Length: 274
Ligand code: SF4
Image (cartoon, rainbow, N blue to C red; front, side, top):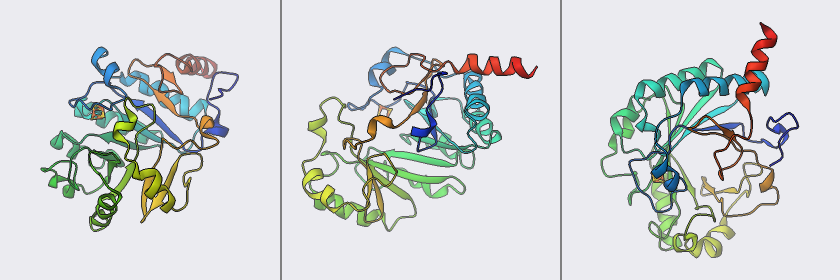
């Protein structure tokens, strides 16, 4: 990822205007394939609202982004106090940005309180059934936020392509968005999770490869299939902007060191206009 000379992001490569905020590494689950698992054990606590405010000013007035989706990730974001999550979403909206939220969906009541605050809620389906867990009928109660259920394509859930195919047919009868994703190749023990049929049966059937520009994704029976394990030619050009719980801003998953000194840029800007 090439950064601009002044330390900012290279917007030419930022096809998808989604800025990610990892609000905490902590989680109430313990998935073996979690990329934040080790960090989550060592690093506790939540991001500061003041860092988010600096970040939003940076996006709006330094990178001059008119449209952007602010994506809240964890760990598990619903471990934060509900007032804090609502405040973050309100702030993003005040800057004219939409909000998106990735959750394991286990803290039902808290999640429902975010209806209308978060524009797009994606619930990871780590359960066996169509809904993430057996007691998730509350998802039908959401009135304002758009709900997506995101299912991992793994041997645990789909032993054969036929099981996967039939699951997709069933999701098409429900009033939720569904998407599917393979694991990243860098996931520990990747081959023990990735079914063989992905390469032999699924990929040949995919339509409209690369539907999101540079991202490895395609459609199957109208459902988005994200394929982070597929290396597309321009994958290294994708800019993924991540604000970490320690307040550092980086373009990589590999480290939460400060790569873009956004706070100083905001401070310099404020000095100029005073
Ligand atoms: S629910 Fe998500 S964040 Fe939590 S341990 Fe599992 S993969 Fe990691």
